[in-house]
Length: 511
Ligand code: HEC
Image (cartoon, rainbow, N blue to C red; front, side, top):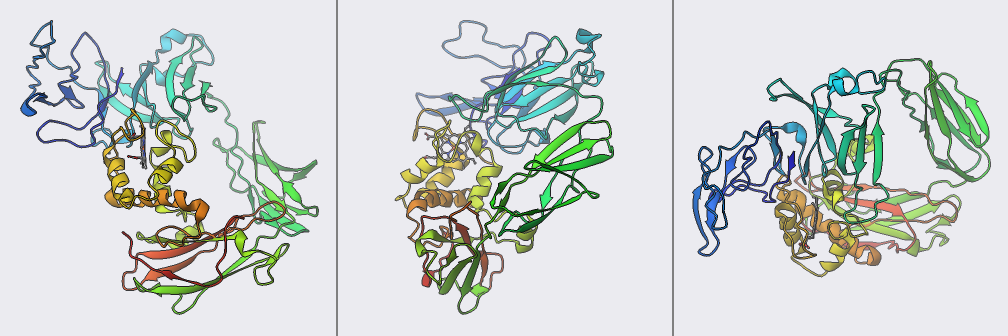
């Protein structure tokens, strides 16, 4: 059985342990510890709410229920040993459970003998193994036990598949696994809620189609080279490729195709990979023909590589577009370009960005995508927690917002937006949560971005008359003496915002 523990993110020396979720195993009737113990049977201290005094910690060998409301036994049976337990932060005992919001769930144990003669049932490998899963963290783990029920091994199960908050699962009479997903938003009619059947495919597995194009947009005639070379087959079968563009089907030379688009439009070339046993998979890319990406030029006067904290820089931006004119000839109005400037105290590895290993995202945004935040927060809509845009609006004028929100993200809590509690995130550092404060001020300011703010972000956006293209140009400035921190100018095409051809910006230290 899964057991959800309390929210405390940190241990308290006086009162007892931080919160843990548990998966417990009842081989016989027993006392599983709550509310005197949690996790690996860590003891809580008795607390007198009237006098606000902390008493002695509970004794694992002799747990006592001294509640005035207790009508049963005072001396409880010894606490049953815990099975799996984990806090918000990294678990030293079960590293595979990851970190973040938690919601431990116990799934079924598979018994081969129940599915004898069912050709498509799960294989005997699963016999006697427990599936445990976490509703928030979206993982499933297969637990191997010995004949006494002790854990021998925990391994990931379907780790490469994105589940949207699995809330129940069972093996069907056919020996296949059925899962119910709640969906991403809390208390909503989730479009991504679903019932899935998980089949074991012991035979041939289909290939994995991957399609790369050397260009995804440009003026017509647009000649594009496609490659299916990164496709693979999990069984190592020979794979053949076809590329479908509109009504044409191209055959590959080795794994390559070339095609010239001579009519403007948005195309979705589809790669069909077929293995030697006939199993297929497909993938698509989007090609925008008839629209050359704009060229964005940023010049910074003075030293283009370094700046001194407290100084200012002059910069000039020009945008030239093959189809739409340029900012110099006035055909692209300044109002269609948005500039943002951001400070990245942790620095950027430019080579990694170019190779795609490090995203040039704002650090706060990265943190949100890589942590568990999205299971309770969406950018524009309310979920379990408020939308990030609402948070941004709420704190737009609050100078202490970064501090307040940073603490809230680390410690959790409720009452500002409603009754539901925000999970604590002790695994995040102060520096990480601080950057989050900035993302909110960015969201709030997005619509009136004319206020140039160094700790905000300046983006140059440009909208084409035809299919819109996005382009970013970055220019990195290193802070003098200290190499790691960098300021970064980023530009993205969009239409609402204004371009300043020349302006001065104050360079500030990060807060
Ligand atoms: C278990 C669900 C859950 C998770 C996970 C979660 N939040 Fe929240 N969050 C909430 C709820 C509920 C509230 C409203 C709390 C309140 O009313 O005080 C909230 C509030 C907030 C607020 C506003 C705080 C305030 O006091 O106004 C911020 C900022 C925030 N969350 C950021 C984050 C970030 C960043 C993450 C990921 C690192 C995250 N949350 C993960 C549920 C969650």
